[in-house]
Length: 128
Length: 128
DNA sequence: CGGTATCCGCAACGATACTG
DNA sequence: CAGTATCGTTGCGGATACCG
Image (cartoon, rainbow over all chains, first blue to last red; front, side, top):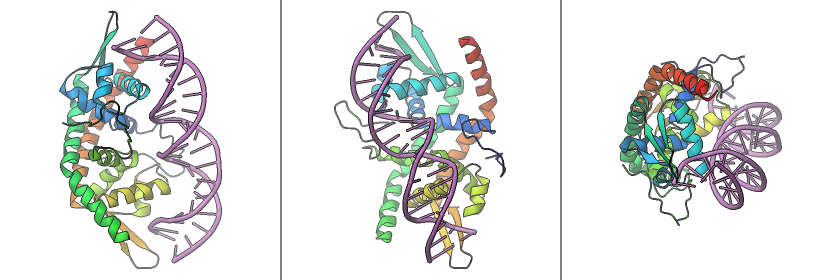
């Protein structure tokens, strides 16, 4: 598995990585990207609905993350020309594949969170 | 899948989330966490070796990320009392599980990066 | 070699106000 | 309702220096 193409002496611009897959990976593993993918895997959501379902995300970050994922062809945006406006977000086929992977990771995390918490306690008291 | 326990009107502190699994998820999906897990899944690495293998990471961020993952019980740190110092990093059992999930996601990303790039082009020219 | 400590700039982020 | 615009802050992350 190729992780990097960086060589010492090269100028490394992380936001325009020579390894473009790293950029894609960062989009789907981004803080809100992960939660959006998991939510949309169940069903499509409207903007505000999604904002409520994913707790703690600002309007700005939700819009921004959705735009990024739409540009990547992972999220599909369907705006209906009605008043008041109605916009539905859903996963593309590509997005469903991504969401499956992300969900597997999230499920593992949930299953193992208790173990991680125990480890933190042990580690902290060992240090004290 | 429970994504959030946030309710409107609650004070939401994202760094001490009511849903602790979100914190764990953010550690393993963090920018360098992902790449470290993938590297360590192959074999154990020494500090500088790991730094070279994961291109573009600063000493500070590498140390910081490793400490976080060690505290979570995902990475094992073994320091040998020799001169010059030698420290090896490897995955715990918990870490191997995590790395498997992350690797699956990374593999998917690599397989689909081309498709994403095409989508970006189409999306950008549609906007122009 | 394998870190820690310190400084600091800048992009990311959140809150708020506003618009179609 | 579904965003954009603006602004203020924060904390991520790089650079550098130093230590055991």
